[in-house]
Image (cartoon, rainbow over all chains, first blue to last red; front, side, top):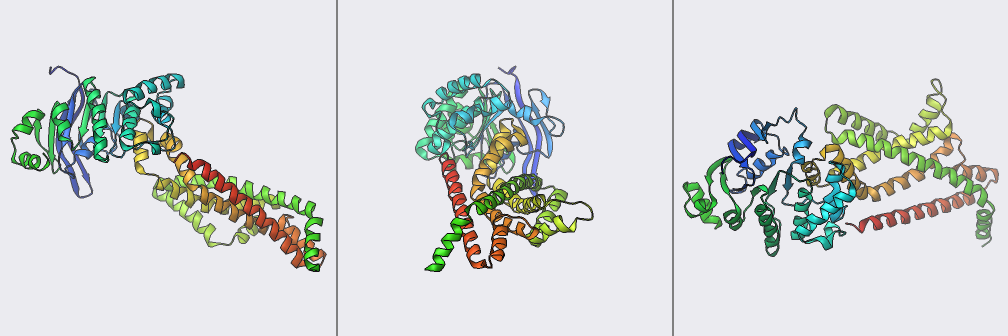
Length: 246
Length: 220
């Protein structure tokens, strides 16, 4: 169990925005096929932590070790790292001037330089997986929020990442559309995809998470098995938070 | 009534003359706009880097262009530089107009680039596309679409400003109108005739821009 490969390791990570100290000495490890769920109030630093993992935010201090390599933003080609780290955003960030299919094949064709025909074939498999084959030629503006997010997931998967980061993937969705995105994510998890998920969906955290991390004020307050934490939080702070959201 | 008939007489009688002039007007305006677009793109890129010295260069360029009349800029190229280099009038007016339009296009393109949601750049980066590939494939196509109405406006302004070429002896629309007006001692008629040409050509380009805008809007 514990000899699984460490995909991402975060060591003593610190990050400030101006005078605001957002991340304080964060340590965490994401192992292969694991689903790590980050919860906490807004402003607790969980999204910033996630964004540091694919260098959309650059840490001030500490290390981010990806697949055994310490990544230094100054010397490493971050694009190469990001190719292997998928990211799904709260607001989808689909490319509005491209069709669903074009969104999915863009990076494989332009970055990985694979043949367009092969990219299309793989994209169709992914669209099939997220249940959107019939939308292949639609533009994002014609899709519902849930459909957009599923396309965004397919677009990320098209790069065949080693790990997928989800930044509040259902927070911008109408309540009735949350389910379809969570189903897609559960399916991914069951296929063994390594995932780090920032979410407010406690049901998902409990059901799918292998590890739950509760953050408050830039620090990790409590971590462990989600079922244990939900039923018996050790810290008062965690208990207080859970009593508000459950 | 007779003056109206006279107007149409002149309008029809000078058709060949003015069509030739119109072609020259369009050559100047379109060429200047295309070069201006290259200027605009280049300087807009410098400006969005937010690197201080580069931004200062751009701001200086825009300041110069905005702060001096186009006719002065044209005269500097055509008359002012004669001791250094002789620039033919077509080139002088085209370059001056391009330089001029470029400053306004810089601000238009910069604004359009900055209006694109920053999530688009993040999405591109997160896919490993990097800054420049994302800029070229994702940001610029959207920014250009958004800028088309402003491009259209700027082109039309440039088209009308090309009339200043007449001051360095070019026989474009306004130059022909002035010349014929003085030859026939009948300025009013020829000025009205040339006004018709400008109105018509501006109308056509406005419609064209609307059409392009409408066609591109389909995907939004």
